[in-house]
Image 1 (cartoon, rainbow, N blue to C red):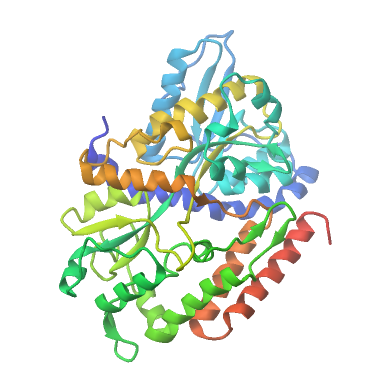
Image 2 (cartoon, rainbow, N blue to C red):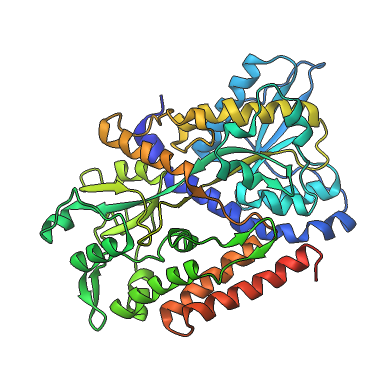
Length: 463
């Protein structure tokens, strides 16, 4: 059992590790060049987790696993590896911790030089970028001959993010979805019913207006909702849109649904003052910490990932709140995002057959151990009943956990394409332009679509 106080004190650090992997993914564009000219490299400076690193018997093969999880999270990974080693005798797994901001760069350098580890876990949204650039091995043949690996056992949003042009290059590890949090004391203060929480954008608008304090002229001490504060791709999905046509490899930003989402952003910028809201937003403290603006009652409603529940227990246990699915555009339906990590065999994996045995075990059994330790979510349909040790075992929090797991069935994943990083930057720029009034919603989306499509075509060899 993980002690709750020990766990939550590290929560922000663990989430920063995942976010850092996304930033480190920018180095992937150099993979082809490195493959052509890289000199041999030695293994990176690493830190042993203290588990799974005992010298194996001389005639027992050793599988090397590089992970970006460090600190307590590295200890959790080490416990999982130790469990595997204790239960299996055909080979031994050694876990090495690579600093979180360096794993992508060191891994692609090792791949290019021909001396990678046998196995690794990477940000799931980066799998296609690695696949297109030849950095990870295809798993389709392994999956076809496995007696316990059926793609239908995973949620579609998690599994398909690991597939490129019909070939699987990874198997999902953990997941995380988003939901809306509301300060119920603010609702009572405004004379509303804390049990009648918003379902649609129009209802969320009414809540935001009721609880906001301040003005565009004088500034704000409390804002009911800033739709672009969290992941900005959620705005399009909640508007009923899609950002990418995977079959035809076309960016689909300029659609009526996505434009409606940007119009919703513009509505808030017009009503509350885009520049004023931006100044307020930039003054806020870091999320999932004691300075979290929702915990400090500076925001009435926020869109939070499932991992934030443990931070709430630590930093604001007495704050009156409730959790609901994200509000969606009137006339559409529920949407969320499924983000997480994935298990891969780097190209040149010295012992891919053995490594896949461990990869498959991690994707099915290892993650089932990870969730109680780390308060992340599973990616498989048959494991959603697993509950984190770090959360209160009561009806309220179990209900919230179920709500987040329910979102796995309707969640989207990031566009599975090699221009994903540029797309994220372009979408952020589009939202900023609409908030500040320098572009119309349609023009902002058109510019983002055009820039990303050019990059995507180039990455695919189309132009």
